[in-house]
Image (tube, rainbow, N blue to C red):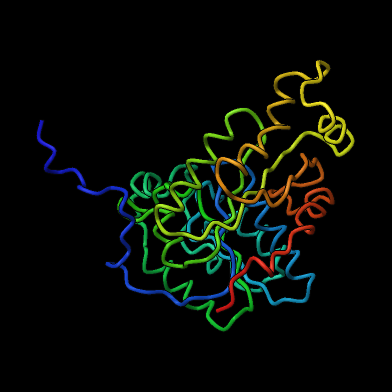
Length: 278
């Protein structure tokens, strides 16, 4: 079987063909997978910075699973992010590429017969220059999710060159997913700021009890995995675990609500210290 049609270096993450983008101050929030809660965490970070007195904008380069409203596609994620940042920018600027199908953007583009317009993404980013002190970017899917066939989330992250915050699940399997994401980011030369573990299900009192006796028989395997995962990720990945965010029924991206437990956990992090000066 001939492999002449295969890319010779599928993971070199070369972005030279797309030119340069304005270098703004901010953060790039990605996830180990879809549905890990990166929109929620990105919104909480944006709100934290806004409440600290910063002028904040938000950006989601591509969004799928959008709903139709008056002939346009609207991203609930973009609405939530805009609410958290108190942004008055049009939602079409916050999420410049949108698809109805809840699929990877390149697959949704093929299904809907509308190719991904990378130039629109680049132009929307360029219009943020001078519009805010800090921009919180939320990727789509994980770092290796394709936006177009040849342009993935990791390529955009490399072009923006912002500190990367990785949102991960708390339960069994998250060590592998998180370390793979850290590895991919570092292979691309991205600065990894740290990991936020979302939907953590061990409260403070239980955690203190478990810290005294990790082998306590009263705790099941699932609870022990969640308790030990943050330490394993920090040690094996050589990366800080920035926050443990409790499962919070008050929070809803769809209804633009940020629960107090989520915001409290995010507020404990020195986000401005993480954001590099430009």
